[in-house]
Image (cartoon, each protein chain N blue to C red):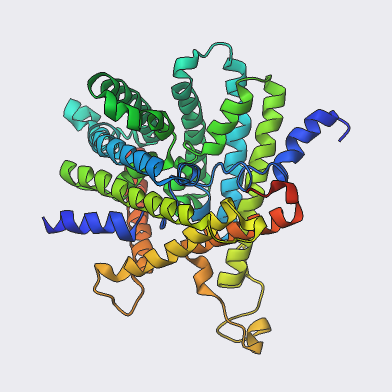
Amino acid sequence: MIEHLELFFKAVFIDNMVFAVFLGMCSYLAVSKKVTTAVGLGAAVIFVLAITVPLNWLLDQYLLQPGALVWLGPEFADYDLGFLSFIMFIATIATMVQLVEIIVEKFSPSLYNSLGIFLPLIAVNCAILGGSLFMQSREIESLGLALNYGISSGIGWFLAILAIAAIREKIRYSSVPPALRGLGITFIITGLMGIGFLSFGGMLTGGDEEAAPVKETEATIEKVEKKGVKDELANNTKTLN
Amino acid sequence: MAILSKKDTKLITDPLADNNPITIQVLGICSALAITADLKASLVMGIAVLFVMGVGNVVISLLRNLIPSKIRIIVQLIVVASLVIVVDQFLKAYAFELSKTLSVFIGLIITNCIIMGRFEAFALANGPYRSFLDGIGNALGYAVILILVGFFRELLGAGTLFGIPVLGDPIEKTGLFSTGYENNGFMLMPPMALIIVGLIIWVQRSRNKELIED
């Protein structure tokens, strides 16, 4: 239970999709002029992430990871299809988005009317693919955690687009320097909000003297390194054999 | 530029300034900003996108009459994904350290809106040669902004360029540091990338009043 809670807070606040890793910025900037449309897109992102991340987790676990094919028989133990993950993930996402669109249109026309126009946009939203890729590189352990990660990073994205849309609605009444109007000021505000979100960094460590976000990146790098070493070892043993 | 006609030259030069994919078309910001903390990663990202866009635009343009319009997004994604796998495997083989720093962001080139955007807007309606030029032009425009941001962030944040100290040694207090100058570690934090892009937009739009939004 505690790990679910930890993952939730981490994905929503500390590693916020928009403010910490800049994912889904294109639609974030393009669809944040009005709060109502922002809410629609945000909800669609949560929805799609909640479906695609667990699905890609299954794919990763039983198809793509080194040794994942072992369920087919012992002779498949040293197959590594990891290089296929991009194409598998994006194909899953594109088909799922299409499928969700069809199903929602059939069974809930009212939901379709509010989400519908955003669904095709979502297939190319980096936050969705990013969710799956981070799920893979952070080595999330179980299907439940993967589902949790999908939903909570979606909520983080939702929060971000909601906040910026509200600010942009208000900022129309302020006198921004002409050359900064529109895009420029949105970038700078997002930057400032990002600085604000940095302060969530100490949330899970109890505010140690060291800034937590730095540790965070170090930890991920270390993890990636470890994985790399593992891969290297696997390759070496393969050549030896 | 004798090889290129005037119209073709425009395809390359336009995206570098007045029709820049990042600052004007607002495409491809997604995977770009997180990796600009140092110049080398920015440069490699720029080159990777250049390759994917150049080749991808040609492929899509060659296939444009064969792709049913209903499933074109999936086809485009598959083409980009295959090209990105090539780039990813290449980096893993020849620049392993770098591919670790770029981690998932190479993969995210797939959903880089700049690529899909140019496929939709240009390659689906034009011949392979012009599409190639358009791809190269837009990727260069993208790379220019990336390199600019990477330059300032690395210079002000770490006092180095491509990892080589240019402002002196902060510990030994040589060069500029002997005058009491300090590195601004904050420049290496992710939010600063956004603020620098915001400033670049500000400078660009102040110089060219036509680009101002209302």
